[in-house]
Length: 484
Ligand code: NAD
Image 1 (cartoon, rainbow, N blue to C red):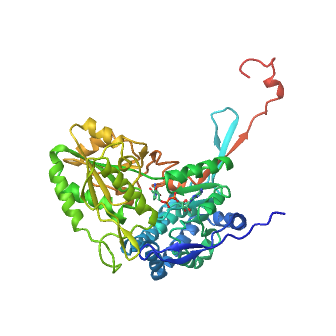
Image 2 (spheres, protein in one colour):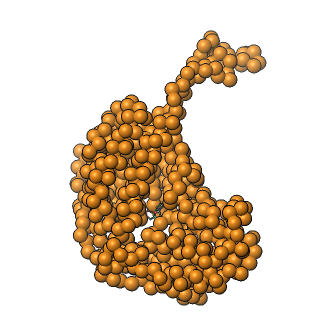
């Protein structure tokens, strides 16, 4: 008999104070197995009630989340150290639940009548079936939103779901569970579990489809574990998004866009702009406007409800970002503003940082930074701009600003990334119906946005009906007449 010991509690750090002021009990493999049996037993009823009834439940969950907003907001603010974006996350998840509730009934395939096959004497029928149990593993940068972004369409498709948020930001799990508990039909098929990487690894093999959002390094591990269990996966991984500012653009508008798209959430977003590639004719004006804008940004130290950017949510990330900046400077890059992580009140903070003179051999241009850092590189020709934008292995998203949308769109067709924002940047955060793939090492699997976000959770089952005379074995023998 195998006896598994419960896993010890893990302490959770507060990003504003540095104090270990929360704990989680990471779910172990035995807990996940028991939970998955329970959810699998409930899933057929959830599937059977049909899309309209499921959608009513999802609207009820949105209402319950709104009723729990105060508790959820307090927990998310403690998890992330920032308030306004936490409020936005809650609003975004309620919007997501209602949006999928609106569109899922039209997306769910209708029953199919028997029809003729292209093969003589054969008729076909078929149906689409949800994967019974979907797993979702999520990161710490938008804890609630990214915990639910795959779970909601999976529920809409009729799947049961186990969500495993990051151990870095788990305080929101309790109030989210409270909201889920208020909708018993969803509680029966949706569990949110506490845990770390080991919990995540145990979840991968316990489900029928796994959605992972996180780093490239962990994504590779998840893909390996999933391959061993032959579990299909969607991986939404890191990025190194470029913003190209073409000749003829307005440099001040471009600087305003770059600042927002690089520094929102203190740069802790997969679609953050991490390299600005600007036409040499605009470079001086662009840098001047960018640095002036960057210097006006305030840290929301002290009063959490005041200031523009919050702390590093995960303390080790501050060290990674500082090391990239220091390495770039040691190799010849210049810091025009920011550049030094400050320790204030136990949290780690970085003011918007503008760098020039960065080269491809520096980690700051090769690796994901995940901080409010803007390396700016000038270009002379569009060929050069395309080469700079396409350098490296990431391909999550990108942005192009030009004289007008048409010229920016023309250039955007040269960019190898799954989504390109035109005349703005980071539009994938707010636009939900643009289907896209992650290119390169930024991910694999169908689009999570648009109809594909739900349809990926359905499998096809074909019924192939013989209406004529089944063939005898002799039809496959050496003496069978040519052509059958
Ligand atoms: P991470 O890869 O360290 O962790 C993500 C999740 O994986 C966590 O829940 C963690 O507990 C779990 N995990 C760790 N080891 C595991 C294992 N062996 N098996 C299964 N699960 C495991 O990522 P992070 O640091 O939390 O998040 C930041 C990263 O997420 C960045 O690279 C960012 O770009 C990426 N991200 C991508 C998107 C996207 O949509 N493409 C969105 C947000 C964040």
